Image: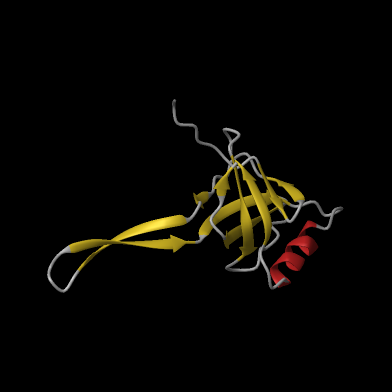
Length: 127
């Protein structure tokens, strides 16, 4: 199978679907485990597995002012819980998991009609 790159096709945030720009890619770390090698007091190496959150950075979504997209993003950011998110990649693969916006509040780019969001949360599973 050959590698397929490209932008994220669409993102669903708590049930609302956002289209993504065709030029922008994002960085996706689905989470689950990271490995770290440690050395014991006796000099022997051992493996430490850490559960990692998912992290999706640089998602450029189209903002629909009629649908009040920015208000929806503000509402999600203000919530104190994780909400369902689905990310569909260019090759059709879909990742899903409970997420939350993190980092800076998304800013509306009026010239492009977009906003860039970051998500973090439970490990995302390939559907």
